[in-house]
Amino acid sequence: MINFEEELKKFHPSLEVEEAEEAIYNHDMTDMMDILREVMKESKDRVQ
Image (cartoon, rainbow, N blue to C red; front, side):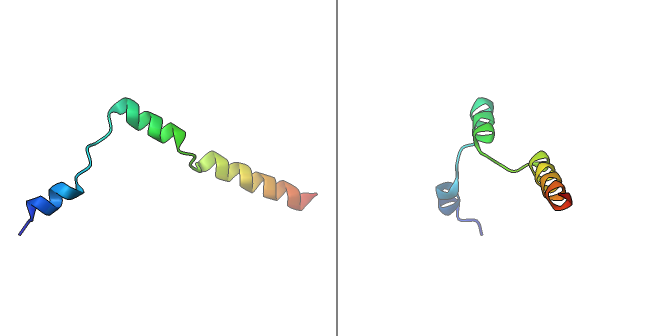
């Protein structure tokens, strides 16, 4: 059985679009380009 009181305690309202964009852009995350740059750099270092 679902305990609604417990579920309400866990509830966090969703961010508005602008707040979500800001949170995403301000969070420094590794993306594919970062990984590719690192791989290319390591590859270049090994050749030299």
